[in-house]
Amino acid sequence: MPTLTTLTTTAEMRISNGIIVSCILAIISAAVQHEEMRCKARPGCHLAKCDPGLMSPSLNANEYPVTCVRTSVQDGEEYNELKREMQVLQAAFALLNDKKMRLEGNDAAQSKDIRSLTTRMSTLENENKKTTSEMEALKTQLSKSDESNKALLKELNDLRIKTNDLESRLAKPNTALQMITRRNCDGTQLESALALNDSGGVFNLDIPKIGITNVFCDFTDDGGNWTVFQRRMNGDVDFYRNWKDYVKGFGDLQGDYWMGLEALHQMTNGRNMEMKIKMITKKGIHWISKYSNFRIGPASDNYRLNVSGYSGNATGDGFSHHNNRQFSAKDADHDALSSVNCASDLEAGWWYGFCSLATSNLNGNLNKTGVKGIWWNSPFYLLRFSEMKFRKRL
Ligand SMILES: [Ca+2]
Image (cartoon, rainbow, N blue to C red; front, side, top):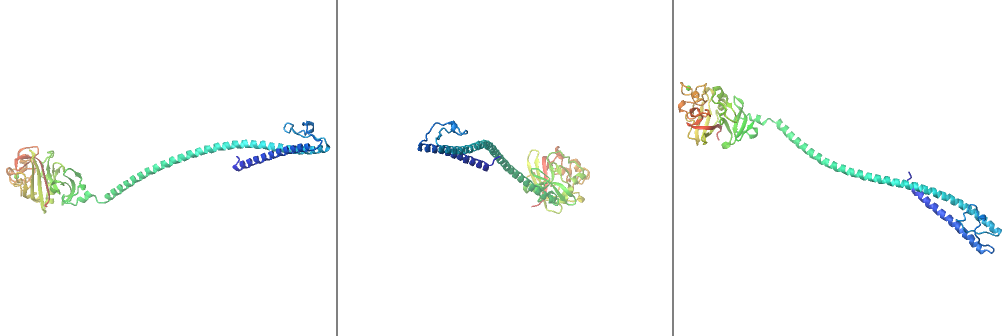
């Protein structure tokens, strides 16, 4: 493959050789013209048509049509000398012509090489453009990938932060478990609830001498902090139960529910507690009864009721006959009548005195009427809902 330098040198040689050939031809022409001039200037010398017999065998009459024919001996010698010079020049010209032909052949080959190179360069240029375009596309794609990677990294970082937060919270003592040190619903936090409904939630409380117990705390009514210990609303829980059940508690914490006498005693004993009862009559009338003092005695005193300071919009104090009475169940008769068990007659557990003088029966049968039903002040005031709760007195 010829280099650019080789091509340049070859072109220079061609130019140089062309000049040399032109110079030789000019010399020949000038020599012939010189002889003609000399012939014309001399007496006895005349121009004649070319005589091939007097010309050099290598001369071509068509290429050199004008030639002097000498008549004198001197002229013949000069002619022969000139003929030799012509022969030398013709030989040189033949060599130069041959060289010219070879150079032209080389030039053709080089032109072919140049065209091939040009084609190749064009192809390379196109390939270069294509590669550049592909690189730009790849760069754009990499840029997009970079954006995508950044978004993924941000999402990963957010997840890591959440994970760290969760791990941190898990490392701390469980909030619900923290609540077990509380003795009642005062100060409980919503997020600590094990379950929630519209008015409050279920919490683990640590009740003295009982231990961890699930209790429903009311957050919404009248400033909250209420510990609910009785609720009647659905009628799907049997309240005609024995002593043991009433001591321990039963039912659904978010439905019909009895917290238990022992818990009532432990949570109210020795503390200034107030108590509230929310009621809805069968006719849909809403009643409230509040007591500024509320306390339940120990098991040794059969969980005697100590309640006073009534206020409210109900028909009156439904605990008026039951205050200072011991609790009775169908298998535990602690009422004022030795001949009968009021708990059996009224089919509930309650602080009974004289059966017929009872002024309330909130643990009665929700589906019954009369004395065995749920009522406040009189069996005529049957209820379809009741909720009893206490809190530390404000
Ligand atoms: Ca009795």
